[in-house]
Length: 315
Image (cartoon, rainbow, N blue to C red):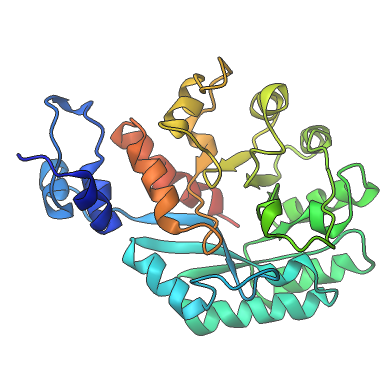
């Protein structure tokens, strides 16, 4: 089969990119490119890849307009790239004080445009009163499978006495708790806004007290690394997303324990979920990072959807 040039590679749809980037280890020792998703399916006798995106946002980002900021446009974009399900938070959670209204708008937006594809993940702010009622409404009224919290924006640290209570309540309701490390690049933030530095290490001790809690860190890399990451992997059952895993082959290197920064403890593949952080990041960015990593077919399928399905189960 003929190879394609770089320009053609990047001009094709991401489904073709997925096909073109199949690890050569899966093809024996024969190095060649597959020219279409149809050839990909023929070689592996598979249906079209199904991807669950565990990290997107809806509604208005506060600092600039995003290309796919309208939900209807984002849904079309995700469907184009075989995203079958997306877990959606709300950009309004960063600054709005009426959390209940934020969660209601998010639920309505998912229902209006998602057609079962968008799963709303509301928010609570434990620094403010009556967050327990916000959590109850997320679960009981809006039927949300989980919530997403933003400590660098929501003015609480993980030493806050109510953080343990939050994790306990989420676990009791069999919901997922997504903890956001970062949302944006500081260069895009209005200079009047001063983001807070928050240590994620106290999460470890809290999770050890609530071992059945379902917790995922999203856009976590700038907050969790080195020995802290090793503690998360060894001492908790926390899961991670792929949104900010950078460098060539970064995902496979994380799994192998061979990141470019030096040797580290391997991260089991069953602890990694696909997350694009769309529309802030182009969804193609994270699809390319996934498919350019030399992963086995089992590893790819685990990250694309199997881990997320298992995590969501009973939530």
